[in-house]
Length: 177
Image (cartoon, rainbow, N blue to C red; front, side):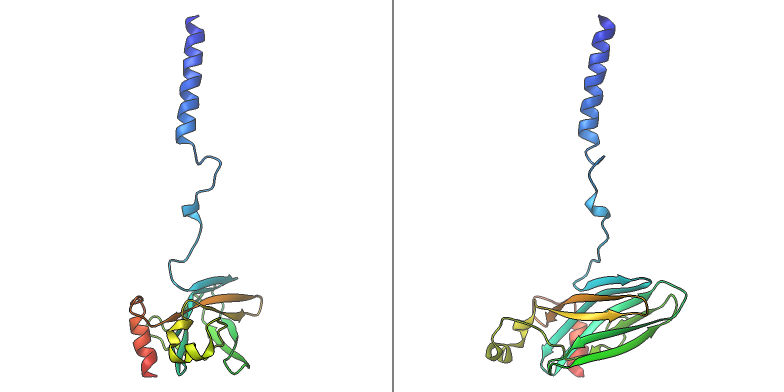
């Protein structure tokens, strides 16, 4: 009888312990999911890693693409960006990144990539002309190509505002161009 009670008590104790401490035994831990802690978007194209890519807009004359493109291989990578301009034409720009190097636009004191991207928005054109910051919060699509891969990346449109001070230095540099 004493052995039976010990077995029952031990079974209850082990079940309680596993029930309260092993809750993640079968469910994935979301904190281990990879993400970029930034405002921009990212994509991996083999060894080319596009990080924190976004489109900064002050007004019709001052807009630029910013972001970093890291090469995680020893071989030089050539990549191209393709996007639609406000005029409705396709623009194509090609760049190279040496092995284990980073090509940045705007970050690391590098020049911003001046562009005039076509941003689809529901804001009426007359309101947008009067207040360009209304385009903020939209997104725009760019295509990224390497010799072996391609991806479409929807990047956020960020406008200069008193709420966003993180990119003030980039907006100041953009306004000077």
